[in-house]
Amino acid sequence: MGKRRRVAERRRTGPLVVGGVIAAVVGAAGIGGYALYGGGAAAEGRSQDASAARTKSVKAGPLSAAEVRTTAERFLTAWQQGRTAEAASATSDSAAAGTLLTGYTKDAHLKDVTLTGGTPSGARVPFSVKATVSYKGLTKPLAYDSALTVVRRAGDGRPVVDWHSSVVHPDLKDGDTLVTGESGTPPVKALDRDGGELTAAKYPSLGTVLDGLREKYGRTAGGKAGVELRVIRGSASKKAELSDKTLAELSKGTPGTVKTTLSPTLQAAAEKRVAEQDRASVVVMRPSTGEILAVANTGHGFNTAFQGSLAPGSTMKVITSSLLIEKGLASAEKQHPCPKTFTYGGWKFHNDDDFEIKGGTFKASFARSCNTAFISQAKKLGNSDLTRQAQEVFGLSLDNWSIGVPSFDGSVPVQSAAQMAASLIGQGGVRMNPLNMASVAATVKSGTFHQPYLVSPSVDHRKLATASRTLSASTLSQLRELMRYTAAYGTAAQAMSGLGPDYGAKTGSAEVDNQKKPNGWFTAYRGDLAAAGVVQAGGHGGDTAGPIVAALLKLGG
Image (cartoon, rainbow, N blue to C red; front, side, top):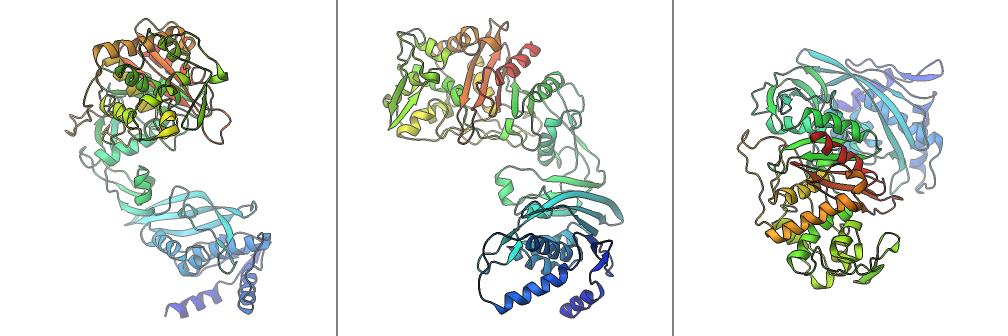
């Protein structure tokens, strides 16, 4: 039955050339029209298939414009006409394509699909989609842009659509699905610490945060679900901590209420400050409690401030210094070596512009961010020493933070030889984000690790992470002096000017492969505020991230 029906449809829906553009006129209910390129594509496709059948040679070489055009048209025409199997067969992964394209109609309840092609760029073909979401008497139009890429299929060289879920919708990652129905989680109305409503329209950086709040608290905040078209994340996206996403709302649910710790004043200022850089992120928190007061990112598609995994550069020296002081390998006021270069594990480590400090103290090396002052101590450390210090004192790298939305707790893996030495200066395998580094500064200021949080644990009685020990009074005093001296006289002095005397800071620059400028980092505290920021590919942290952090510390007062 199915095969006979497809043959009949093909006879009814042969290409009709109107004004030089081919349009597929479809008689089946619920199927829209498709317009892409000049006429003759269907015939070309049949001719191409017949030709392929006559020869066993594998076609190779660059794709021709005709091959790209014909393949794209074949796939898109079949998709919009509901011939799922035919559309899937025109891709590099017919099984995955068939599942998602079938779900597009059955699970996402999308009908009246109209596809319009744009101008190809090489093998890439952009196209626009218009459709109607229809569910239990509720309807809503949907329009978006997507693109496909044509490649040669391994084995026979036939041009096919390189299959990824993003072809169907750009917000889909491989393994994700589209579903329309009552949302699994009711909406939430997020409030700032003063009771004002937090919206993505007012605070663009909070889009992913609001999604995370809904996912965690939607079922318990007292709301009622609406009807939505949503991206349901697959296992790969879940591992990357991407939240489900609403694409269209057919009916509003009744939101529950979730109160956060965000300060409206600091949040607004943070949004403004990061917007002045191409790729900046910042977090502000309260050292005495762990409350997060602001979080902002230049880009709003991924929350780098909470979930980023970046080498922190020399801001890591705050943790390393606490380790060296505890082990008696450094002391703030004692002389400490800072040569131009130092070789360890077969790697030759340099200072910025190969500077050196002759006869200087450890405090001077910290303030100027001397790499070799730290690398020179690697031979006296065990491979796991830095990892344990980060975990036991600063609460990092244990994967147990619960701040109220998805976050990354930092990573300080056990390494050896040159990689272990590189970790001491925030390179190697060490990975952090502004939330982590704001917490480091907050731990130095308060003397005790307080896990950062966006929603009070009293809301859902969750247990916050703790650190197993604190620094001795002597070590903590020296660490604060290192950061205070850096804020007053070191690489952070320009950014922190006028914010003393109860302050401390550390700058950082992290080298990234295939990136001309390093990522600029800055972490600091002032009074009962701590903050950290990163400007990716920005250069020195004191010049880029420093002014952002300092401005927020000044505003918070």
